[in-house]
Length: 344
Image (tube, rainbow, N blue to C red; front, top):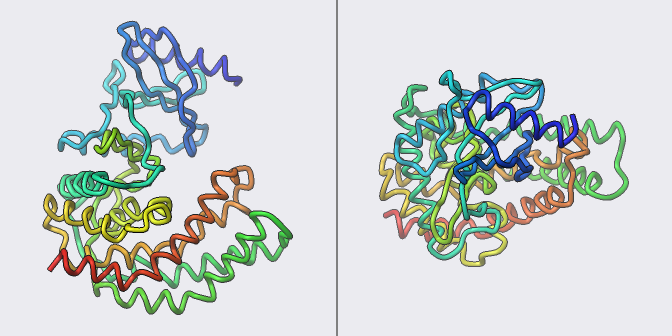
């Protein structure tokens, strides 16, 4: 389909399935795997329409939407998902499946990094999120060995596989060549990463979490959190990992020299609303974040798995992740001392 016919299909779905009479439908912010639209209704309201590509697991997407609304019922800032006339969360027609949610006005993603009061605002919001999701029917929080939270053995396998793919057609320049060299360096440094992981608590909490709490999925309005979007289906992961993933985003770490102090503010705010997560696990947030980056093959793997996805933005993000990993490891002792003073 071309863009114009896609817009017509979206307009038809909104009318038939949601009783929304659109006065305009425009392409919206680009999604990682979806095509997005913004529709305006006859009352002047705006709706965010997410169109899923063919082959999408729509049952998984429904469960993700249900999880977001569970969080919303816990008074988290999550956009309401509009139900179809039959009470569903996804509608399909004309070869297209969509979900519809309230559009978050006057907000920006957290991709610009955290600063000022945003540290505490994000920490507090994530703390409330994890406290709410700990009550999700998918199951209560449990404990697992730390090696399951950050699996160095699995990382070695993935890096070996990636380097084997690069060996079949060795890149000579650009991002693919850098990705291959970086993957090789990460493989060489895995013994040091394994030693770093030994500094984590023996066991760690896992529970239902957002699942994709990255900067594009955290919307800010000034110094406050405007919305959490793009949940994944319920699955148990480490809340300490998820907290570190968002507050120690590479762009924040590289842009804010005083990030250890900001991290302490975020973790203090988190703990105030979610004391269930122990001081020991909160102290482990920067170590876990550094180890996770060191064990990751993304976005290096995109050079062979999905070359079309290697945009200038992805290249910059890849370089930022590598630089942030080095910064986190270099300042780990300093950061843990700052957190120790706050947590004890």
